Image (tube, rainbow, N blue to C red):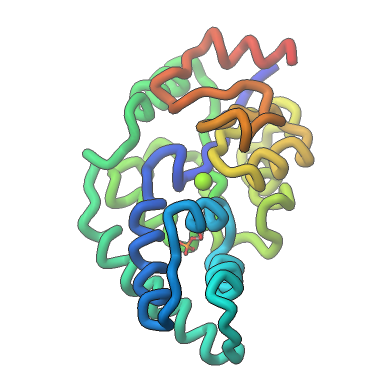
Length: 217
Ligand code: G6P
Ligand code: MG
């Protein structure tokens, strides 16, 4: 029986990928190589330092650990200038309605995100209060596809993993949910999220009937 929903943040509740892209591209421009929107797909759901490693591998650039830390810090400062301009209008369609329905139905709500900026983003969107537990990039040591982030969220809620549904837009996130023994709703395309129990375009397509149908999967 489904008792809790655990939401990824970036790409599920808000489209921050466009800001991540601009901020990473600025570093690529400086280092003199091309970084495309398609390349950016590879950074979804991936931690900040791993994203940097992927970016550097795309440009075939080598950097020392100190240089990498400086680059990641600069990228984040740039990213934050965009994040801090966001408001509730950036919440993806259907999110609030679905969260309200979950509350009414007594389904518990948690966040499971790789981002260290999750708290800042939720505050900007004025969504913090919906989440009973918030597990973000500051609270985990193992990145998705490791299930740590979702298992910690379930534990914080006091709900068994098999009573949880995870909402994810990244392949690594779907894998994390499944290896944690949870149900998973993929947000996006079937070619990327094929292993999810249900695939939808966005939370505007979600409802209680579809949620409880996952009990049978
Ligand atoms: C999410 C995004 C990734 C991002 C990661 C870390 O998983 O999908 O693209 O790299 O969070 O974000 P942060 O805000 O900590 O740099
Ligand atoms: Mg995501």
